[in-house]
Amino acid sequence: MRALTFQQMKPTRGIHHTVRENDSGAVARIDIDRNLCIGAGNCCGIAPDLFYLDGEGKAILANNDFGDGSRVLEAAWSCPTDAISVYSKNGNRIYPPPERRSYLNI
Image 1: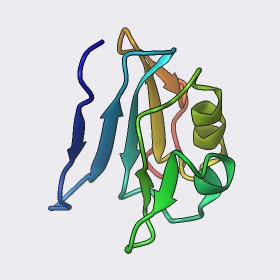
Image 2 (image 1 turned 90 degrees about the vertical axis):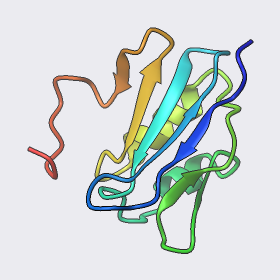
Image 3 (image 1 turned 45 degrees about the horizontal axis):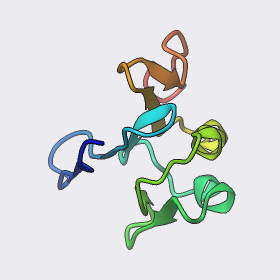
């Protein structure tokens, strides 16, 4: 098993992502676009052990234990702005589907 990687870039002119990777299970990577996140907290309600809102009211991942990925996908699906992107081990975007265009970034 590869070591956990964690990257949290400070917001500077543009997209602010939180990325965590995990080699176990179907979900390998989760990105949170902090420019799209409005702090609705749906992800926190569905998976409170995986997501929380930081001091700016933006979603952050609490840990990298995604399990089978079903709650991660449900949390991503519940995001009203599609700020949560979920990727498989081979790098394919699972959610939102590649053909889907968010109303915020058309």
